[in-house]
Image (tube, one colour):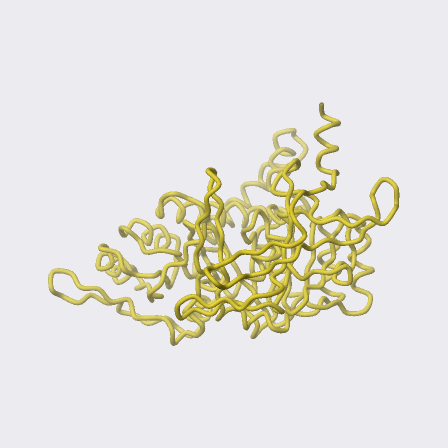
Length: 431
């Protein structure tokens, strides 16, 4: 049985999906063409044409389709047109190294990284993705520094993830990536020698994403978003548009309570505005309910997929603490925090090593102190913001619109020192 399970992960499935798919919206039709690649069969070495390895799990047939025809307009909304393909347009030429043949999750991780990076074209940026969420995201002066920050935001979760950068892959970045285990690397281009550095890991998928020079244009264009239901039905919706492009798009945090206006007493500093904007852009690619902590252009803690907002605020803090401690253990002792604890329990290491790391982590509040807090939806009560304030956040961004906005604003004003807050005027749910 164990051998069969292992074999299922290595099996590139055939699929029974058609070569072409047409979806009609009244008298308008979108035409999609299935994407497949000519590859060497892993057993015979013969060239065969295959699409996706499998879907979310082995045993699930799956297919990738590219929009090739149709200019859909519904009401006053013009949807994205053919010729803008990114992940769906990957050809054999873009597969610089196939590695293990790609499956659905590999490509959706890259796609969701692009969903974040399309807002960050002004500066080098990197996303390390896992399970369609960022483990870490960062921007910096160079792509190598952006990747370093994104990786160390959560080195533990980064294991086996997808790395996507928005600038040409250079040797400094490639050497960093090659020192860890990842499944996919994607970039708009690769400088000479970088594919060879990365290609030392034969199973690594190395991808050059077409049309990344036009990635930012997709930020202002909707696509048709389909959700299949278990009864065979579908829900169709417009993809969301992020209205926050610059700091000027934020709104003052203002509410009325008992006929009186309540507003935050302090406006964000320039540095806080920069992190608030970056955090809201990263938020577009995080599964709701979510709360993020951001400091100096890098994610500190990411809480995602929870049912209550105060709970996810606490989880993001917990993750920030655990990841901070793990990073210290790796930097000081060359091993993960958990590996260090096991060595201490086995009598192979002094317990003071753990004490020192725990103390340093507590003093830094896991890196949350001095960060900004980002929430994809409003706070239904002040308990969520109180979590961040207790850990030392200095500014908060959230949609606003809650019945509790006034008490949330008061929580910011009562903090010592006062915490700045701005509203976005829109929610960023992503299910």
